[in-house]
Length: 301
Image (cartoon, rainbow, N blue to C red; front, side, top):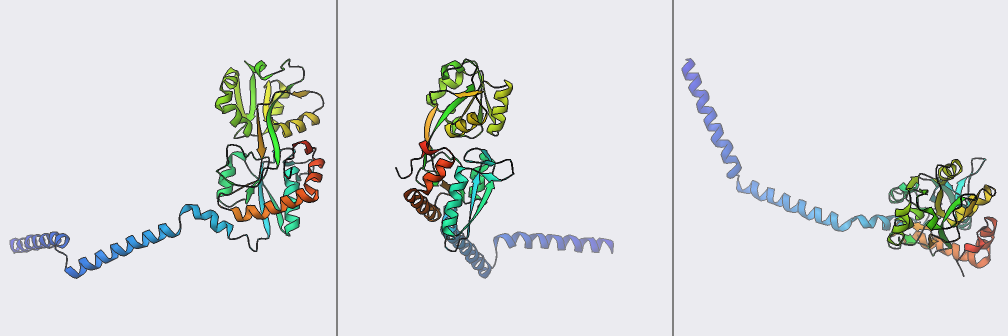
């Protein structure tokens, strides 16, 4: 009896094995046709999705929301006076924030001031966390990376040193420690091929998260010079008495503009229209005078 049961089991397993192998190679015709149709439909669907929603259309969908918009979220570095920073009362103020506020007032929008880490600005913009980057944002070298307004401020990169340091020119920085903000225009200038010899002459080039740290290092003697925007340099020097001076020869020259997500020209154009109107009626000049930046304004000139 046990032998008979064993024989039946072996026969059953052998038959099942033959059936299983046949199922992979000899599927019924109707099943094969159905499977082929499903595969073709899936492929066609994938093509439609790929054609209908490429990554670059993200900005276009963002642009379509301009109609009915009620606020503008501006991304800025909260440690970059006089363009944007926190005052002693804990309020965010600055030249660029005043410009943005005037634009929003004219449009009937709410201004949302969003401080960001400067080296994360592109992520903040592409994710939709902010509508634009507006904070002494350099246009030069980034022309194809954003939807830009017309440049509105002419700015330069300079070196600030201690007044009693004996440093009178960039050549005197050989063997010295220089501080610069990470992902800043000054860093870009120092890394440019045209300044390769100058940068190589430094004892060390140290990147700091913001310029308050750089000036603390300069005051403490941990740094010999700070490379930064001339507008910020003027503010820092003026607010610290006669302890520091700006070297006469600039590191580089540049202009500032407001940067929107590439493809979001619709929102850019709305803001540009208001900036042009402010330049024409004198409000732009009034704000620039308040922040002692009159000499740097180029919009409307």
